Image 1 (cartoon, helix red, strand yellow):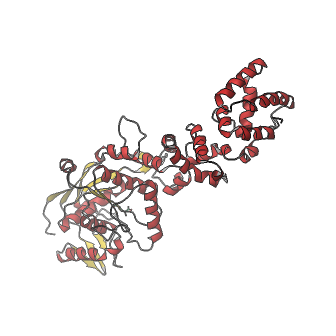
Image 2 (cartoon, rainbow, N blue to C red):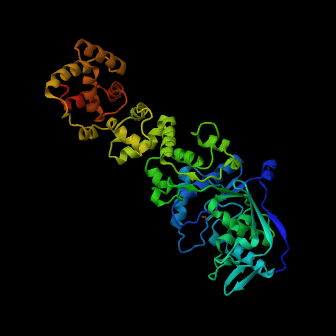
Image 3 (spheres, rainbow, N blue to C red):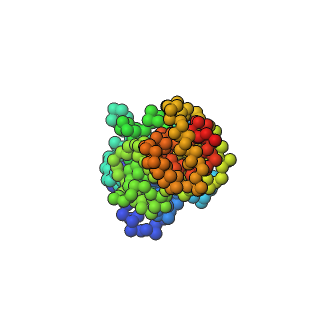
Length: 466
Ligand code: GLU
């Protein structure tokens, strides 16, 4: 075969650390054959974090050589998903850049050029219309993976048939299309990618790709393979585990910042500190070398916790903007209330609700009486109790000042005087105002709803007679 023994190494990570001025160029290379799913979003996010942390360049490359399954719509949805998560790219099919085109289908001349070069050098051969790369023997490959460490592989094991014999690698199919393992090398090299960050399921491909780099006389980039994202049952995340596309999470009321934070924690963590962080803190703290190789489990409870924390930390106007569509989806008249009133009602919810959707549901009574009427019919109130309630609410509704503290002080005093437990008047009031067993402090709710609205709701249930 004329092959000599030798070592072929990827660019060691420490060189990157020493040469901080070395510009980082990373890429996310989705195939537009479906929406942006959690695994893809995870990969995109880690690339983005690393690019932003290092002040580098984040490239979006569309791997659309599977012309039967690739569509422009999917390309659009992937971009929409990335935009939703706030993962902006610096170069890409829509943005352009100095290393385009950014769709593989538009780079056919490059794939042909280097296939011809391999053919000329005798490192590839034709079989019909297809071009096959001849797998060399006796080469020891060392993949110095930033995350998985040093992985050694003999060239003859890089591509094998089921019986273990060496299998030459198809680089151009008989229809003229390049294969993934070949196109990715041509693209990563010609796009000057310094570091390939992708899922661990591509480790086996990497040795094939390293052989192609070597044959073309190119230095391979740094490789950093990310741990797989598994479902709770430790199986690869799939539709069976629930929502897979990022837009399903948006529809369920998860915040982009919450999903971002949650995905960043799959295989990485700031260590010791708070697991809840903003996008910019994530960028500041992220370290590629600190990513673990242990598979990460997609834990819905954790997502809920992280999302809720972000919901709590949001500014009132941002929270209102996030919740409003969900109120509208519930048919609630958000627009017939003032912005301040709506913001205050969400603030009063005091961190209740794990998602914007839950928060919208829990706070529905601030927008309309209708959902309260549908939930509560006051049938548990014994008729003998009504005169007492009437007496209490008649006095309460006439308090000179409509403020929670005053109302509560009045209620306590009144109950003491009349030998009535406070809950006997406060519980029916909570039900009548909110239609719920649990709510923020009932006097606070009453204050915000306003005297008139409270009178209306109490009257409806015959708790108040005027
Ligand atoms: N198009 C490939 C994929 O979706 C890209 C893999 C890579 O990043 O090299 O898996």
